[in-house]
Image 1 (cartoon, rainbow, N blue to C red):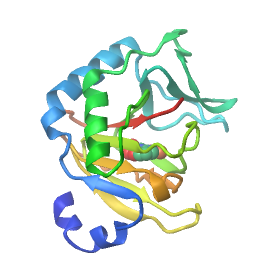
Image 2 (image 1 turned 60 degrees about the horizontal axis):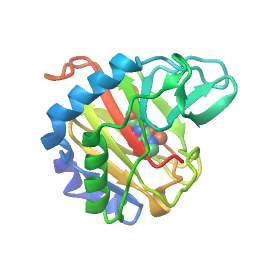
Image 3 (image 1 turned 135 degrees about the vertical axis):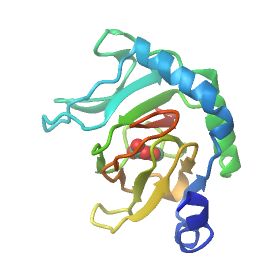
Image 4 (image 1 turned 180 degrees about the vertical axis):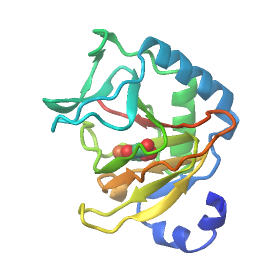
Length: 214
Ligand code: MD6
Ligand code: FE
């Protein structure tokens, strides 16, 4: 089933007023530029499995671009201006990323959005992200724009408490999610990625989350 089909009915109703806006296929016209820039960033700052504060490697491989990058290690979660692996600044934010994020935020009803950080997540089949809040940014008044590429994943959209039962939202190649306002601190995650093959990305899902971190 395509995302658009689901959004015609109950899921769209459930999401109304939640602060989460799904823009199906919004990034498709940016596809080529996005994929080229992900490649450039990953050559400068390779994907790596960061360590959680609890000492487990994450199943999702990550890198960043922009003036700050999100990192986790034994001392916790935070934004860092330098890539700890190279001790050099993260690759610059591609114009295509910032432009897409600004347009998506405007479409979702947020004002000017100028991201300074982009976390890039790479999932292979079986990789997942457990329920979490994004709370390492300075200003929770700023939205977050999330872009999905490659294999379809099930996004879990929970509530204000970790125990709240999440909605399951399929996110496919080119889908963009914008959230902020009342939804900004909601728990969310990604269910284990099912196996599959995507014509552009193969056996992978790439997710970009664009934020105003500093
Ligand atoms: C993902 N996304 O879709 C994980 N966080 O791979 C997130 O954790 C996320 O999509 C904050 C805002 C948007 C997101
Ligand atoms: Fe998140």
